[in-house]
Length: 280
Image 1 (spheres, rainbow, N blue to C red):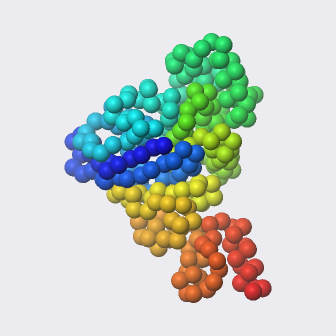
Image 2 (image 1 turned 120 degrees about the vertical axis):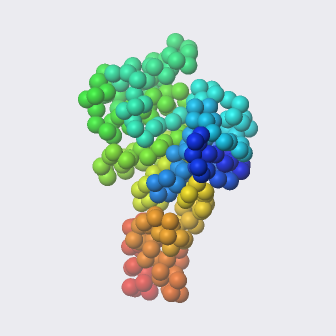
Image 3 (image 1 turned 30 degrees about the vertical axis):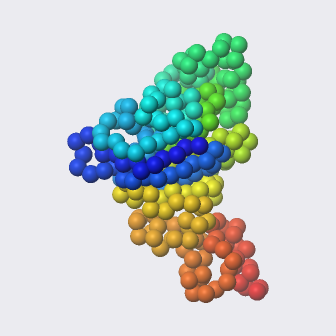
């Protein structure tokens, strides 16, 4: 479990807090989306979770972030990375090798994984991501979606409990974006890996995530199950988050007293709602 209590952080030489009074609990096996407009504090929050703050980015730090009871303030990022694997927004900056196989071997060797486990972990992580055929390819020859999968495979080989991703689809086309989220859901459901993903595409989060934390000006302003958060579409739009049209439509119908049962969060649900209204 990840437990964040009263977390406030201000970067050195900054005039205002990047995070302010953050309280958040992420249970084992959760699939949590973090959303907010630019500058809301999303990336800073991920840095606090994986220990980059306060160990690399320093400043005024108050409160606590605990991973399975261990305070990240007392653990260096290398120790934490065996529990929390991070995929950066700039995927190219994360790559340290020129060949896919070496990229995955780097982490295994760096953390002194026993030699008799290395091949099994390498091959199984590639297979899990569906990229065994890329094993001997050069990194520079890969597409954006393939690079994302390689980065996730490299982390998966270390068998972390938590996978933390910062805008993994920012450079991907819609089809590749959906593929990455389908992959994340499979890792979450099949292996019980806790998924925390910062994402601007609210349609993807509403489709795949189970919980949603909404940030604005360094604070979490909404937090809960996706459908419960989506009930507040007017508030979301007021802080610069454009909700899917089906969400806005269903909320407006509910506000006008139309009995549609629940807020629709995807097209399939909207179709069922429309048929019910037409034939009901």
